[in-house]
Length: 515
Image (cartoon, rainbow, N blue to C red; front, side, top):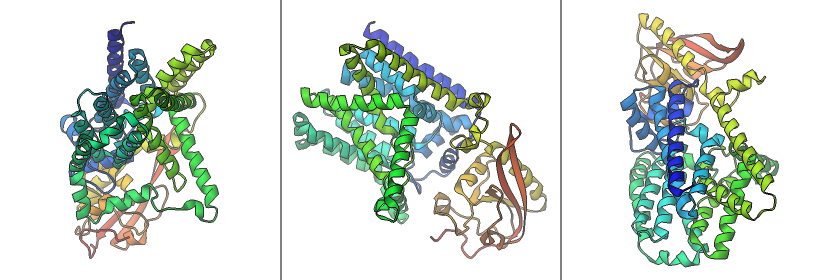
């Protein structure tokens, strides 16, 4: 088949995946995840940065909700757009490096059917921006290295800087690039030229608003991020730490195998290794770039898992290179193998497993019909269910309470507070109560409810729980009722909703946590 036909097929496939995801986002069964709802909250208060991450995700949501409204579709359509753009970059990257349009087509197929990418393509989180800008940085760097134009380095710097606004781990691109130069002698003269350094300056310039915001807010993001990646931790040196570290490592690696699927994970690892060995043997720089913009990132999070919990999605950008390398390496292996039938069977099985996993991620009710009755009751699906029902119930209670005075809404977690802001009628301002039992979050940097003396409140907690004295002591009275959401005759979620009357106010009108 001619190259132009593969090009047409690739772009048609990307458009088809995007169309399917747009329909799913518009009519799918799941509510916003707590992270999505929280980022939407950020988008209502645009700033230079935020407590845990940069402003990129908030800007994207703000843009699309300004067009489509404060709806699930408005929040998530950005994820579909950036995933399609990332797929396009992956195709172009694979085509430029491996010079084979069929390999590039299969890289797009592979990326779009693995469960983690399929799910991430309909969830508006920082991961979809991370993948896009990481792919953009790799593509621009290879364009510069291939001699196309040295000014591609400036676009590389822009991609890293803009990616940093979405996720701070984008900064790891530069250590990966330095490792590439260390192992690629023919490309090392670039270290004596100005373009890569100007790229870094461009990245820094784009990151300056985030840096300024952090300086003016006590470096809260830096301390939060250090805790997230366990900087300074030494869990393996504590009593029982070695066993715990091993368990965390196996949990992380296991999550990667499940999210990518076992055969694709193995193919990606093999592909990256082939990039490394082929480049070292033949002196080809670009496959080596693929290796060093993927493997070190994955290794970084693998080592981090020894010191603490590392979420399965954190290393997602490391698969950009793996998706490019796996079809290329498989094609090379297939051509020289005497077991072509076996390899072809494994390839088909791998694609079927991926596709099935992605379909089940979109429609887990299929598993319910097959006997997995509690599939929606645990992660990840319990994070995207029952929020609409909770919002409707809180809307009803707030309406009743409004007959006797003004009412505000709060919860003990930022997740529930964010979901209530989105799903309660009118999208009211909500608050995250200080109970003395939680970590700091973005709500603590916004004006609190301390000045609402005389108001009544709806206070919501997850599960069947009592209200903290730090909360009830600030009201004349608080009465609890349990709200239960059922699914197929079973309790899906329960919430404790408190009708609190007569807020007494606080000494601190901003209600900023001190911990």
